[in-house]
Length: 84
Length: 84
Image (cartoon, rainbow over all chains, first blue to last red; front, side, top):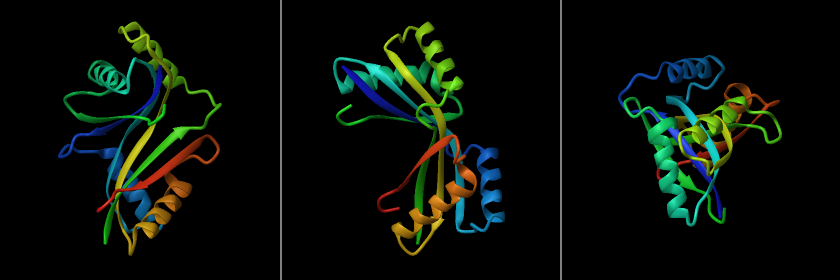
């Protein structure tokens, strides 16, 4: 079976995020002063062939550990789409 | 009130995504041939001061239209965190 998997890779809490700070300043300058604590990361979507949603999630986590995320500086979240 | 808002900005369906293709090839080379249709976009998280979740989402959509997403090449999804 094929499952659509959504991965979110974000800079770890406590670490500086210069891109997030730049976006926050730009938003403020554009008339959105109500935005704060902006963090910018990567969103990755992929199909995973697997026997079950649990297996698809486990494989996606291995992909994160090996390639998609930097374990020192980033955290990741894996979600398997329902009915995928 | 302050709401935590999650934004996902992805290359529009049908448009080429060279970064996604590169990740797909790298995954295959690393022993993950079951990954396919990889798309890479941006994940943005921010706090939004607003009177209600609906208002927070509406403001975040305006931020996407003005800065966070490219309306020609990208689609975006806005989610307001429950209990945020």
